[in-house]
Image 1 (cartoon, rainbow, N blue to C red):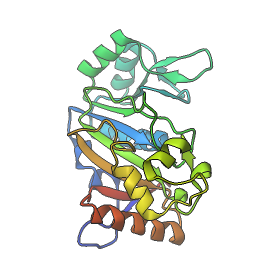
Image 2: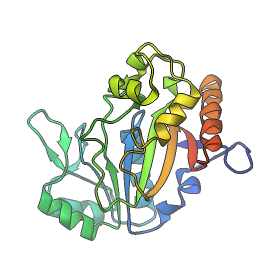
Image 3: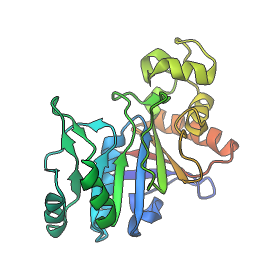
Image 4: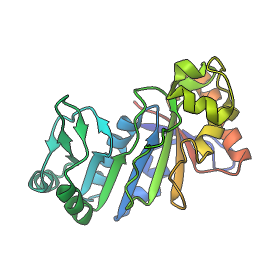
Length: 242
């Protein structure tokens, strides 16, 4: 994965996930991903980075995601994955074949034994943007880092097309369903306690603007970064997955 970011004196750089998220070399973190626009892919990459740094790493969800190729339903499964130098994708399959949170006893043991945990804590039905409902996101109390994710393909699109739970986005922005999202709108959603930042509290909060795949998206990302910086938020990065 390549990352392009513009926080160091406004200068464009490209580097690895570890170059931006320095916590990926540290044990003891529970990282929860919220928002839309690529959380599952980001979870896989962050978990792989933790694992490459020699940490016993787990990936899981508190909502529901697609079933991973090698699920770990028990702590014995997780320990076997760690012994093989792999990420433990921990959870339980439901009757629809979706992957859900681990059983409570497994989750308790996982949080004690894993050295790093990456959690997909929100759902967006594969849409790039969302504002959460009352019951969302589902952030574990043990979480110390939250990453808010949004897809740059949302910029310029109508709320009704680009957003999961569009009625909540309309309420947050005070707009109609056919309103086309601006860079300022996206920054407002990302930084609002009724938007992507809901439930974050005093935890460290990073923003990932994903799908920075071409020159047009790059310019869109720069616009959103500028809007975030104008609000005092500098922990933000543009990403593209290769």
